[in-house]
Image (cartoon, rainbow, N blue to C red):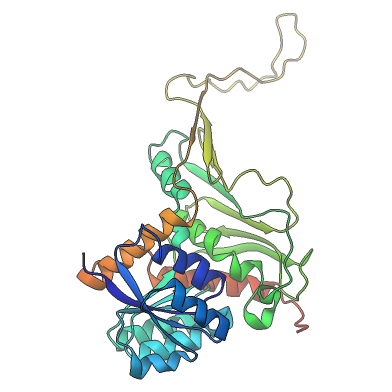
Length: 356
């Protein structure tokens, strides 16, 4: 397999610890990091040591004249995603931009249009769609064991606080922009990315966060004939024991990142009971409560491949195939743009004062 040349802009937590970690690992046989762009001199020096043979630059625009690479990873601050990605696309670079794709749906649409006009690939790093727990969940739900899906509850919560740039609205920070793209794109997936998806309810708030952006978000999505999607991102939830709870017409499936469980009514085990219009009574004539012991099945299991390794491998494999064979992206920029449309609507419904 011929490796493609790749440049990374940014050596922060995302650029180094997520993208860089995968690209330096044994799981990567597709890309070679040949250039790194980083404002901080110490990080540039570290990049020279961590990516043998690469060249480093302080300004990403140096790539335009000094590098010929097959794709550029834009792992800059969130408020820089749009402008830098557009500049790269206009200079005919294929781009993988970190989430959030941009601040607004207009900016996302502009990036998609710019990529098409310049004949290059635009991808958005929404790798959570390929996480082991999510892929396994979709396979099990497809068996129909829990019946028709009625509600999907998604929790990306915990007990923690932040005080970095991700807490600032001016930097496109906050839980909804930072963490939100993961549960929102998966929620939209359950809705088949229906264009008629609506934000039926939303609320943003601050709890433990130091900045002026949200660290609590409640979002309910609906679409005609589709399940209700209940998303919560909460920095004060000390007892969040699942990521997904899927309620169907015959039972429930619940999963975390490492294990799942399911309880459902098997077909034919509980024959349908006719409606009794009169009041129920016991043999002695006293009132009776309408109840029975249903015959149910329970399943549970462990999930392998936890963390960014599996999802990053799957995402980068999809990107490699797109760049080398023209195969469709596993996650399209249009889908990522719909995520931003939801986030933009939620923020419009919950304006928060800008303090920084």
